[in-house]
Each structure stands twice: as structure tokens, then as C-alpha cells.
Length: 640
Image (cartoon, helix red, strand yellow):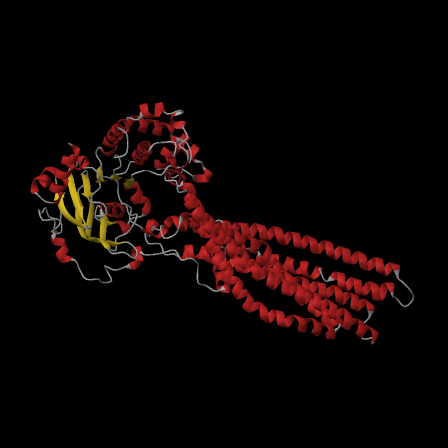
């Protein structure tokens, strides 16, 4: 391995690279590279939110003009009853020559036929809405979910997992409720109010003015009231997310909670989150009830006023009995949508609040950008890694890597050592491109990782973490996650089907890593259930699964976060034997927590407070009298 002038072997622990550290500049302080945070909600207004939401889910408005036409027919069908009542009374029952039964029958039959057609149109509207909105919201969920996965681990960590999950589940559900029910009902209500107003004016312009005079104050109050409702529902969606985050965290950490006897404390924390959500819900519903009750009160007052004034107009002969009855029906058609519209507008605020939280996720900039097909495809083969003046700072924190320059030749085993917090794990994350450097470049065979396609990078570089995450399923299904097969997961293929298709490869990997006896000791061999998060296996056994996955991946460069300090001797032997088979002939970078790993490595990199202070073979560094020699001497003394 070669190093630049920034990383010579020294005995003082002071790298020359520290003298080259630059003042803050646009190259060094690039907050967008590492500091993106998921906002609690988008700042768009109501209509801008709806417009943006529809742009993201265009399926919602597919065929909307046909749906609108059907909705218009359904709305117009509702005014048939008042017209039929007026005509039946005035020209049928109260006909000049006495009741005209044939006309009454004709009018009633025609009205019934129109109502049937209107009902069918209403049913078709609902079917079309459900179809289009479910397609659109499914697309929104998928887009939001994929965006979450594309976010860097640092960005994801700015939001609690449960709260993040709620954005693509419960928050989308609030949108679904409004779009599928409230949206079309709001439209139908507006059409119905318009049609009712025109017909009311035809029957009696005096009574029509009376109706509108009663409702205008309500409409004036409604707009500012909706702002308060909007704020209440926005706060409520945030509290729901916080509650789900607290609950999911306590479920995942149940074992730790029991072990430390903090169940009561945890319960109080969850109770507080639940109470906060309840309080927010009650406050929002109080506002909704106030607005809705105001509409009911005004509707009742309007009906009473129309009865009184209409009777007086009837006495004066200004309006017929049939027209007055029809007007009363029209008042019901007018006031019903007004009351419903207030409730729908409240649902709209809830939906907008949920939509804003989903949009906040999708609007969060992706820091580790995949160039996809435009990215460079790195050819397979021995992997050489270089770090050129790499600097890195975590969000809202100080710089933790300072001008690191390293060159890892191909097929070299490298051990990175240093105290906790020195920056060695950060180097591993940068080499595997879980994060991008604040400045400088990490290169694979001379190509900046940012220029590589993610697919090509993952083919060549694999991280074996301290404890690989296990999914709920069988051992074989979890191992199969390491298979590089474009067909895996296609057409809804389950993990079990993927494992079955690659059973021979899984068996071969287990055998080649010397794990056949371990698998045979399990209750059902490769078919053994590992439980949620692998709780049925020990920490060491979970590490064996991670190693087997990496073996199946067949990468050119392995980055290992060593984790054998808490395993039993038998498992440690298995892990060591499996790692020997895994790393043979490959480039490896190991975050070494025990110096026995450094002793067996080709080269050792010593990191101290974000600086690479020493690089070289174990024997050379141990004899140099520097930082590594001191660390090694202390470790040897402890192991005696």
C-alpha cells in the first residue's frame, strides 16, 4: 500500500496533513452533502399542496372529466324531486278540473326514472373514484417508500422510524379518506348548491335572497375558521407520528426495557404521547364540531324563516302552494350540502396535513445520488480504493475527518484501528458510500464513487456490519438476500421462492464457509425460523448469516466491521474460519476492535481524532514507538 504525504509513518502521532487543513470554503462546508433533514411538513399552501399531490399521483385524475360528467348528472338528478313535487301539486292534484291522476302518474314515473339514472351515475362515480384514487395513492406510497430508501442513513436518522413509517401509511390514509369521499362530495355539493339556487330563484327570488342572506355570514366566518382547523390537524398529524414512533421504539426495545426495569418509565412516556395525540384530536374535533354546528344552526333558522315568509307570500298570492313545497325541498337540498361542505372542508384540512407530511419526505433532497444508467459501470476484478483529501462532518456537528489521504492496493487486507470516536467507522461508511464526503473524493479503481452507478458499486463492494439485520423468515431466506439476481423479487416473488430457486448456491456457500455443522445443529436447518430481527439467533450466529450473505454476493471489496468480542469461543472459531474463506483473494478493509486482527492484516491504518496518523505493516508500526505501538503494548498487557 502507498500513502501520500498526508499519512507517513511517524512516532509523534501528528500527521503532516494537519498543516494542510484549509479554512472553511464552499468545498469544505457543504451542508447539503450531509445535513439534509426531513421536515415535519411541507410549507405549501392548501391549493399548492393539492396541486403538487396530484402532480405526484396523476392516476388520481385519470378520466376525471368522465367522472365529473357523471357527478353532474347525479347532482342534477337530486333537483328532480322538488320539480316533480311542484308540478304534481300545481298541475296534477290542484288541476283546474280536479285531480289529474294520469298526469300525476306520468310525473311520478318520470321522476322515478330520473332518480334511478342519477343513482346509477352516483354509483359509477364512486367506482371510478375508488379505482383512480387507490391507484394514485398506491403510487404515492411506493414513491415515498422508495425515496425514504434513497435517503442517506444520516437523513433517515433525523426522524424516528415509527414516525417515518406513519408518513407512508396513516398519513396517506387521511388523503385516501378525503379523495375517495370528500373530494367528490365537495364537488357534488357545490353543483347541488348552484342548481338549487337557480331553481329557487325561478320559484321565488325573494325567498332565495332570504336564504343567501342567512348563509353569507357563515361563509365569511368559515374561511378564518378553516385556518385554525388546518393548524390543528397539522399539529395532530405530527403528534400521531410521534406516538407511533414512541410505540414502535418501545416494541423493538422491549428486551432492554425489561432488562433494566424501566417499563413504568417507558409506559409513562408512551402514555404522554398517547395523551398528547388524544388532546390534539379533541382540539381538532372541537373546532370541527363548532363549524359543523354553526352550519346546522343556520340551516334550521333558514328553514323556519322560509316557512314563515313563504306562508306570508302565499297569502298574498305571490307564490303557489306547489312552489312553496318545492322551495322547501330545495332549501333542504341547499342546506344539506352547506352542512356537509363544512365537514368535508375539515376532512380536507386533515388530508392536506397528511399530504404535507408525505410531500416533506419526497421533497427531502437525496444526498447520496445514484446516477443510474448514466453512471459509470465499474468492471469486476481486484479492487483498489483511494481516499483523496477526504473531509467529513455530521449534520450540525464538527468535522470528524480532516484531510484523509489513503491508498489501498488491490487484494490487500487492511485493518483500521483507533479509539472509539476516532473516525474509523466513518471511513468504512464513506468507502461503501453509505455517505458522501463533505469534500474530497473516495475512488474505486480511480473512479469517484459518486460517478459510479449504485448497482455497479454494490456488485463490487459489500459491507459486513457488526450485526447484520435479519428479516422475519427462515435462515435460508435471510441468506438469500445476498444473492445477486435481477429476477429476485420480480413479479412478486417472495423471499421463500428466491431461496428455493437458489437452494444449491446457499448449500454450497454454507459448506464452503465451513458452517455445515452449525446449520445441522439448528432445529430445522436452513428452514429454521430466525424470528423478528433475528431474535431466535445469538449475536454471533447473526454475524454468521451476514458473512454467508456477503459470500453469496461475491464482491471484490469487503468492508467488515469486526464484532467478535461478545461471542462464545466456539462461535468465534466459526466466524474466524468463515471470514478466512470469505476474504481469500479479495481486498478487505476491517474496522478492527481487537489488535489481533491488526496483527494478521497486511497493513494497518491508525486513526486518531479524525486524522490518519500512521500507516504500515504491523511489525513496522509496533517498532516505531508511535500511537500504534502504545495501543499494541496496552492490548498485550491486558491479554496476559
